[in-house]
Image 1: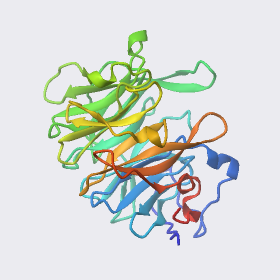
Image 2 (image 1 turned 30 degrees about the vertical axis):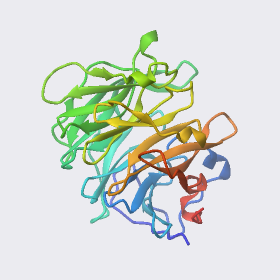
Image 3 (image 1 turned 120 degrees about the horizontal axis):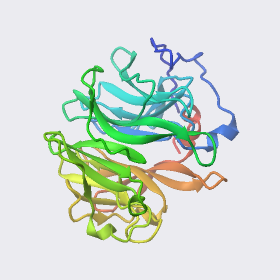
Image 4 (image 1 turned 90 degrees about the vertical axis):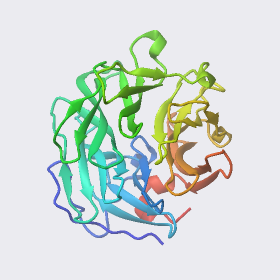
Length: 343
């Protein structure tokens, strides 16, 4: 049975409290798009925080043992990329009023049930936040220019990696490259470096590629290019995730067969990575996350089509050696979390 708990919180202008105990139902046509589905696993490995298909209805928590869902924050905006702090007491996420408006970073306190805004630059859009191991600093991707998109509408451009203290102070730009796209910056090497995914602007750099930049020097970012992904068509490395002990790095690549995106696990600098073979379930996989206190990795598998060429995601788990591949939840979890029935 699903448990719905709507929290009335003091929210910034961008976010609003839930309208009532029964929640807000989304029209079925809008529930098909999984553009803003994202998740993280709690430090104790017992729950998953996530945003649903359209990102509009809020931030939810799935109890992996009880198979129940509750809502933490209700939003009349778009929310995505929720991530637990290392102590499990806070969740950082990105939110915007509309797709073409700037995203900003927000913190939700599980103790006080309050939301606070930590970035508010009107001429920049902030996405993909993640904590340092001590929880004092957050890294994220920042776009500094908005421009017309080739197929219509507006898109954000000139992406780089930045850090900021969890209280919103001490903003620092960590790269100055103006990438076409940046995502998933993560702290590495005992918080002395960042690993992230970026797409460049030249023909040779259009594939998603892993980069590493030191936080202790002003050196330029260095690409991480595992030899096993040399023939990749779309991603030589994307969606990096590091284990809590810093020994392992997981990432997505289509190094074995074009556009079959597998999970690779290697050393902290992407050394000697091994493909886990999750493409036997889906060719399109993303966001691997190490499950604390276990040898598991959870990830999103594009198991269904939405009817317009886009994927609908299921939540899957696999052992770090590629064994015991199993579904944790189907797409209905992200379509309508409060009516999910544990299947």
